[in-house]
Length: 222
Image: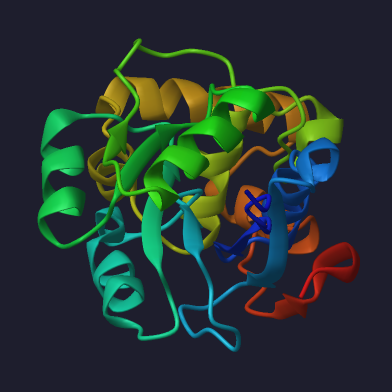
């Protein structure tokens, strides 16, 4: 019997932050025989026909529902998967109801993430069990990491850089208002800001404003 020829799964990565997506793309470097990044997109449009769309939720407003629905409806996308820190049951339920095929935690190391993508591409619906707040998987990146800003602090700063209030940030991140205030105070100390205006200006200068651009054919991908 002839061997069955297989090809790597082609994926696109979607988010508004270039540094976030480049870090995610590099997580697949050692698994290019199984998963190939075809494009990195800071918008919901697609140029290529894709097997799996991996939607990174970093600093995305309105709990991502509108953009996820748009990606699901795109004829060029195959399976749509949400990649996130927020694993609240109501968010998972909504994403699956509008057509997402997976809801995966950013705590997954690269081999487990690749395995989950393969299962989803094969027809399964895969949801990472909620483990509570955990550290992001090795290899991920985010704005401000080099300045000692944590992943969660970075997301909060990105949201206030977009002009959101503390109440909006709490609602979108599923954090308590007091926790949001604690993150903001910590960020202020780390960047030397004494006011929200100073923090927002620092954020704009240091990669906390959305990028809105596309990178095609990542590392020779299709």
